[in-house]
Length: 268
Ligand SMILES: C[S@@+](CC[C@H](N)C(=O)[O-])C[C@H]1O[C@@H](n2cnc3c(N)ncnc32)[C@H](O)[C@@H]1O
Image 1 (cartoon, rainbow, N blue to C red):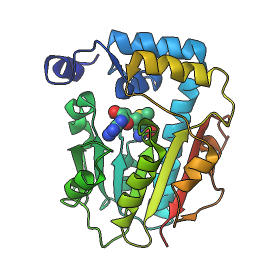
Image 2: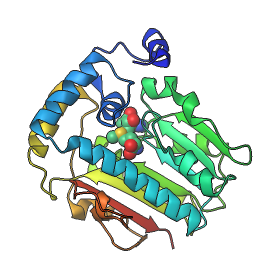
Image 3: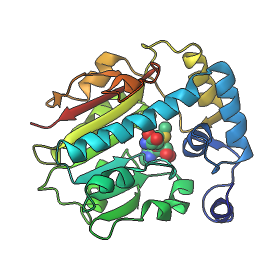
Image 4: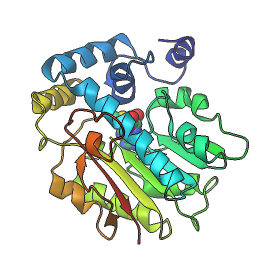
């Protein structure tokens, strides 16, 4: 781990005895903020499901393309990024503020290691703002309350849920969370979602998830296209619809298809 991770280790950021998703994801992305146990689980998953690193990288590139689209083409200036993950390259505010320095971003995660590193997410351009809320996706009202200190809910918001609803195991609850979040933002707001699936192949994907659920936290689930589409009820799905996140409006050379759906939908 980096120096700041040492700080995390000695603080309230967990003991590193059980692999956690934020740190393993950071490992797959080539970061340095993980413990030995995260590396061991990450390596085992890669052995079972070699495409997992590509899934993580494709997911981050999807985030970059969508945030650029929302700031440059859709005029969105506010973002609520839930399940942020550990700071890495091209975080949401960096992409958004490159085009719109006045953009305001609230990051939300419930992992103590992410909290310990959150100051790296709080490097806003002076014209804009960034904030971090240590909160749980299972409690959208708490998230909205915290976000209201930085975002105005009478102006469009990009609600970003990348790789997070897969940790809300009950589909009705996950649907309710999306519905609650989108009910708080005005027309012209957007939902951005990515979610693992078994429907796009991915040799070893199911075995890797089973291993994860026996050896790491929090437990994960894949979902079908139909289940993921149900999260967009009442919203307008933008083209190209629900596709492998690598195929969502690719720029330049397209990444290989990954078993992770991505979508963007607009609140009418
Ligand atoms: C797969 S990572 C995705 C990170 C980032 N969104 C991305 O796409 O690169 C999932 C993140 O969700 C966070 N997470 C998992 N369950 C959560 C919950 N119930 N509430 C808030 N965050 C959660 C994890 O800590 C982790 O940082």
